[in-house]
Amino acid sequence: MININEVIETNNMIQKENLDVRTVTLGISLLDCVSDRIDTLCDNIRLKIARTAKGLVPVCREIEREYAIPIVNKRVSVTPISLVGAGACRTEEDFVRVARALDEAAREAEINFLGGYSALVSKGMTRADELLINSIPRALAETERICASVNVGSTKTGINMDAVRLMGSIIRKTAHLTADRDSIGCARLVVLCNAPDDNPFMAGAFHGVTETDSVINVGVSGPGVINHAIQTVKGRPFGELCDTIKKTAFKVTRLGQLVAQEASRRLGIPYGIVDLSLAPTPAVGDSIAEILESMGLEKAGAPGTTAALALLNDQVKKGGIMASSYVGGLSGAFIPVSEDHGMIDAASCGALTLEKLEAMTCVCSVGLDMIAIPGSTPQSTISGIIADEMAIGMINQKTTAVRIIPVEGKSVGDRASFGGLLGYAPVMAVNPWSSRDFIDRGGRIPAPVHSFKN
Image (cartoon, rainbow, N blue to C red):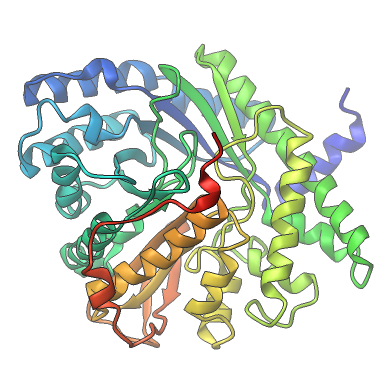
């Protein structure tokens, strides 16, 4: 039973420490929408999303009112569109039409974002995969709520370097087509290794083919709550620090499970997982960097930052899995630069570099996230950055991602503004030495030896 002290504590977390449910994401399978005619496919997609998602936003608002729990985003993820559209889409324009249909359905359902304009190409690309990937710049430029992702590697298959090379070009084109808005289209595009089927967070969410027809996944976030708890054990040994983080993560995850179960019951849709990732916002008091500094670092990026982040990530997972039997998605700590005011400050003063962020991704939950770089960065260099991050994921058997924004017309020291939860970011320096000949080799980097476990 929940006692009155727990109720008071939870209210304080919500009112004073920025605790919220970051997203309720409804996953929808579109496999039954498949057709060999583009008009029929688009109609089927609109009808399926309208029918399945019609109650999502009203139910979330009911839960917010009844439990006084903020639910920041209401989202939908769908089956990777390269699979759904393979029969009907014979040109890039056909896939862009599907993107418009998805955007229209998302707008009618009043959701924030729709993820799943995706291709899974870790071992190779079909004709449909290639068409979808090449359509991404236009699809993101001509829609408002669609998010795209491409999984180019995995521990079991290695890294598809042809796809990595292509994604460098796609990111540059997306930046160009949205140059009037600080290349914001790239904020809705992520390149992944070991992408999970049940991630509720954008831009990498899609409804995996292993999932049921529809499912509710919840992402809960509480950097401010964790930070407040850590400040109560300032100067104490690591054992006490770890126990404090675990206990707090347990409480945060219980809130997420409550919302997930209520949404599932009211919508009549199965509950999938709780993703207990610490996802920051630009608001003061809602920062991963602040947590690291509360542990004893002068600034995020200082020596010891990677160790502190590893401790945080591990203890969050240990606490969360005791609170819910179904923890999934990414779960841990995100380090998006533009969405975390502490990270922004650290990058602006030079404490945090691209290379240090890459090191931190070895122990956090995702990867190089929401990083602004000069618009003049060569596409081969962008591909090289992607390849490095994919290698970290492949070798360490974890999900890694790259969401990088070459801001057209801006250079190191300038600022890119994206608005809302996406925040703003200083344009960071990129290593000037070329990786072009390496990227141009093409082919596939084989899976590591420890992937052979049969």
